[in-house]
Image 1 (cartoon, one colour):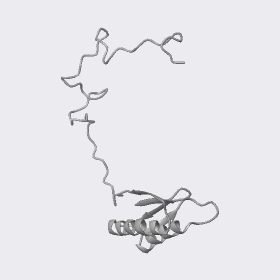
Image 2 (cartoon, one colour):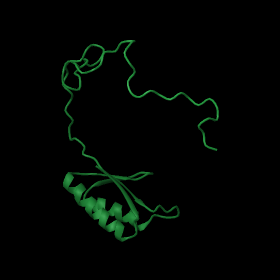
Image 3 (cartoon, rainbow, N blue to C red):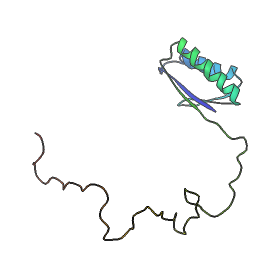
Length: 131
């Protein structure tokens, strides 16, 4: 899927660069859908790449000063996730209430020293402030 917007915007008409971008996507064989904030077009990868190349070249040639473009790969038939026990980011089985602690993690105790530099106390008067 390709999503694009061309600028500058015109409130009193449809700019030539916007029409050119839409035409490039349609003529590449993409299914085009125009929305209030941009245009989306869907098709196979080769169609999308051809459309993007043409869209960029031709819209700049007819006055676009900016082109916002996003290309997304959509799965044809996403496979369902396989059921199984939850795992931690490293692949280890997760503890019932979250991932297991690693050996290098500091213990979490009430008397553990604070982490990071100490914070400065808040200013209570005009001291330290510049006029």
